[in-house]
Length: 207
Image (tube, rainbow, N blue to C red; front, top):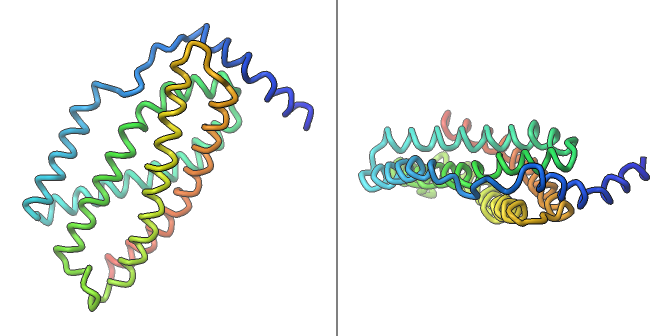
């Protein structure tokens, strides 16, 4: 088994070069066509916060939080293990299609969730130390802060690094493999932490 793993690692650079020759680097790092959608979402969020409107804020928080939770759980516990078992060329091909979309999706849903959630907490008085849900809210801030750092400080840079590596004339399969492992592990961590977030948020909603 150890010999097979060693051989697979040694073959990564050759496989990367083969993939580059077959598929080229004909993908866009940033999906430009999706930018108007992202802009519309962010503008709507800003207007909702400025107007302090309850229903739109609730909508943004529920939808953003649901997407963030669902994506983390799906990527961490479904996509991650699948990627881990794929061959290096297949993994690189998948990354070239998957990562550009995640580059826009994750910052957008994180911004939706955090921006609307904080404004809701202010509007409903949950930030006051005397509020019955204050302790649970502080716990959610801690968990969400850690997830945000992981999502924007680890996952997103890994996404960008993979895309730039794939754009090279001769991508380094070892580098891509290492970055994808980082992506898989951190996605799994945030997926597990999302379970804690679900427990906290349901407690806040029913208190």
